[in-house]
Structures are given as structure tokens and as C-alpha cells.
Length: 551
Ligand code: HEM
Image (cartoon, rainbow, N blue to C red; front, side, top):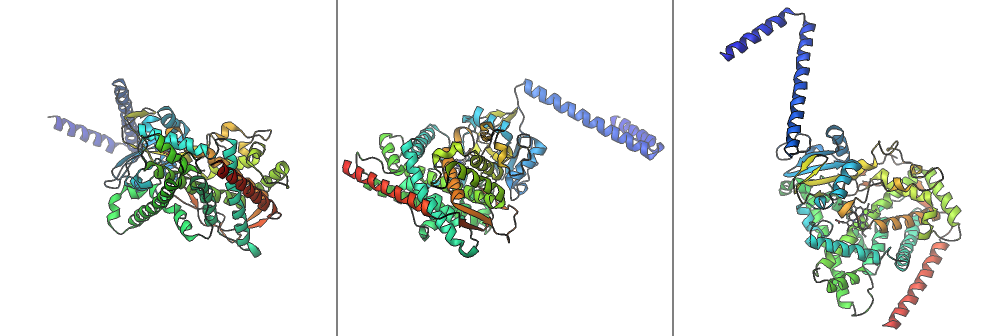
């Protein structure tokens, strides 16, 4: 009966439409469609209100996930940019599926602060990705799960790092001494490679320079730039970052590793480099354990961690080499990438380079080298550093997080064990926060009197926030300031006119500029660098004599 009525009604509608001129039929259809859409929206709103009244929250919106691969194919070669685009459609908090992993992506300062700061513990986990278990002998602090013991390890690591770098005037001086030695070697190599107007790729020498500063702090020794073994060890950052960067297929689609494929190759390279890196640090650990004399002052961070472990039995012995591997690894990849970007900006923006040189010459003069105490008096150089970090956003997405409990963010339900991607790039390129975010302009960080605007510098997000915030932030800023101010004080940097000025990059945990070359010449002579290094060597010899006399 009902079916008969329906078909009669349809016939009547058909007849009526046939009787109408075509334009009117279309208008009627359109009206019907709009009414249906409006009704649908009202019903959805009603359902959400009912869910909220009953205390239920909905999952974040997101694109349709395909069977097996989920949304892996939608991330492209620059996932941070794809995330920002998807945020334009779905909002600051949206969800994806990568293989079998449910993922929520956080974009923009508001959502990220709400998660990492206001609900720190709920968002402080790490996903149990297979690749994470290969880092630092399977006991990584950076890639390990959030727990009571993990908190103890993090506190110990942070305190020890400070105690050997930025914690006191004496340790800052020690850090500066190591850095000056490396800056001298770096300048000499860059200038030699540029002799006769040649252009050289600086990436290798930068990696060794920063690895040597950290090696001195961690193990008490540096390596020559010609040491092939050291270079093989520290020169594989790109393979590391490619495997663990947010959206990496190594963890999203692990079954691809069963077939010959780029994913299998990336996984194997990652496994081998982690094995070699950990073996190197573990070797240093065993040497230190054998040679550390009871009662003697710790010679470096490795000694300090061994001492700490003996005093805190909850820390296991294997945690010592694992933590030092994390610190040594995390620092040299990030800092060498940062220096590559800084050099790119110096050569692509010669006017900015000239302003930095004018400032450092005016404040420091030409009779001595810049030092850490000059930092507050060199606002343009600091503005250049912050603009370089903002513009490149070279850690575009943090190490993936995971939720440790069921939680809510901006009204959305996020179940426990959801993978969380934190898109730092979206904060640094938010047009609501930065005018013309795609322009490179250090002066955006200076106020009308030429002072640094601290509210703005603290809005640059590259060291993350909350319980997983980078423990090397302070040390990194000191090192980047010293390297940059010494380099512009001592050298001129020129771009290779035969290279495309477009700033291409490769994506990973850190984004790296595509290989580039530059020409470096001295502004005066090497005298200041030579004299500074000789003075510091004499100081060190006097210290060592005093120490051996005391014991
Ligand atoms: C410019 C240089 C650096 C940048 C931009 C940077 C950035 C980051 C970021 C974004 C994270 C991930 C935070 C998260 O998952 O939410 C991180 C973690 C970490 N960083 Fe750095 N980092 C830098 C230098 C360093 C240095 C020099 C060290 C050590 C001396 C270091 C040690 C660590 C450690 C141990 C973690 C793991 C923290 C955790 O999981 O709790 N980083 N860093």
C-alpha cells in the first residue's frame, strides 16, 4: 500500500516537473537539495548536542582512510605541508590512519599548547614503533615510553647536560673553549676549500665541527676532520631522520620491509647505523668505567653519568651508554642541520649578512672575537637566528608522541595509545601570527628601538613544549650564537651563481637543504682565531697540571 502511494507521488512529481520549463525544474531540484542539506546539518548538530549532554565526545574529523595503507599516500614528500593543507579543510585537530596506526595531527599554537602543556602527561607517550626500539640499544630516553623511571632518567640527563655546558660560568667557559677550537678548524677548512674562487659543499665539515664539540663534552676528546671512521659514524644523519620522521613508511607500513623496496633499504640502513652508533658510545662507556678513579672529579659527561648511576640504583648500568647515545646523536644531527640553514640564509640574503657584520664590528670591534657575553648586545644576530629557525622550521614535526590515557582536545575524544603528530611548522608559518610568513625577514623580531621582542622569539616553536621538550635548547642556542657570530666576524660568504637559488629540502625528522656550495674568504687574517686557541690551550694545560697535582 505504502509502496503504491510512493510510486503515485513520484509519478505526480514527474508529471509536474515535465510540465514545468527546464529552468524552473532545476531551481526546484536545487531548492530540495539545499533543504535536505540544511536538515542534515540540523540533525548532526542535534546529535552532537545529545552526545555532549550524555558526556560523549566525537572523534576528530579527517580524510577517508583507504584499506591497508590508510592515508599514507596523501602525505607526499613534505608531510608537514600536507598536514597544514589538511588543517585548512578539517581544522587544527584532525585524524588520519597510517597503516594500522590511528594518528591525530595537531596544528597551530592553541591546539599544541592545549595538548602538550595543559595535558602534558596525557600526551607525553611515544608510540611503540618498531624503529624506536632500535635506537640507543633499545633503551632510548628520547624514543622511550613515558613512565616514573623515564622521568627520573630525563631529570638526570637534563641536570648533567647543564652541569657540563651552560650551568655555571666555569662550564660555559669550557664549552666556549671547545667551540672556539672547532670554529678555528672550520674556518680554516672552509677558506682552504674556497681557495682560488672555488665553491665547496660545507655539509661534511659542519657535521664534524658540531660532533666534535659534543664529543668533547661527552667523552673528553675530539676527532680530526680526516678521520674516516668518525665521519662514517656521524655522517649518516639523513638515514636516521628519514626513518623516524613523522609519516615515515618504515613504521606505518612495516610489511613493505618484506619485499625489496625503498622502505626495506631505509629500515636496514637505520638498523645498521643505530647498531654502529651505539657500539661506538658503548665502547667509550667501557673505557670510562675502567679508567674512572674513585673520588676523582668527573672528566666529562660519561663519567658524570657513571657516577650518578652508582648513586641512584634505580638507574640501570645500560642506561648510561643509552642516554649518552641519545645526547650525542640528538645534538649532532640537529645542530649540523641548523648550521647548514644558517649558511644558506647568509649567502641567499647578502644584505642580511652585511648587517650582521656591521653589528658585530660595531659592538665587538675587530681586535677580539665575539663571546657568549656579547649575546644581549647583538640583537640583529639573534633576530637572524630566530628568523632562520622560524623560516626553515628544520624540525617541522616533533618526534611522534602517543597518548598515555583517554583524553580530550578541543572537544574531540582522543583514545589512549593514539599516535600524535605535532606540526611545529604550522605554528611558525601561521599567517595570523606572522605577517608575510613566507618572507625571510629578521627585523620582524626587533622592536622600534632595535631590541629583541622576547614575546615573539618565544613564539617560534622548534624545540617543542611540555614534558618532551628538547633538553638541549639552551645549549643549542649558545652554540648557534657563538658559531654564527664568529663566522660572520671572521669571514665573507658568497653563493654559487650557477646554483638554483630555490631552497629545496629533503624531509625527515630534520629537514635538510638540498646540497649547495659556497665560497668563503677571510675578512682579515686567522690571527685572532689562532691566538684564542693558543690561549685556551695554555689555560687547559694549567688546569690539567693543577688537577694532577690535587690527586
Ligand atoms: C637546534 C637544535 C635542536 C633542536 C631544534 C631540537 C629539537 C628537538 C625536538 C623538536 C625534540 C622532540 C620533542 C618532542 O618530541 O616533543 C627534541 C628532543 C630531544 N632533544 Fe633536541 N633539539 C636540538 C638540539 C639538541 C641538543 C644539542 C641535545 C643534547 C645535547 C638535544 C637532546 C634532545 C633529547 C634528549 C630529546 C628527547 C626529549 C624527550 O623525549 O623527552 N637536542 N629536540
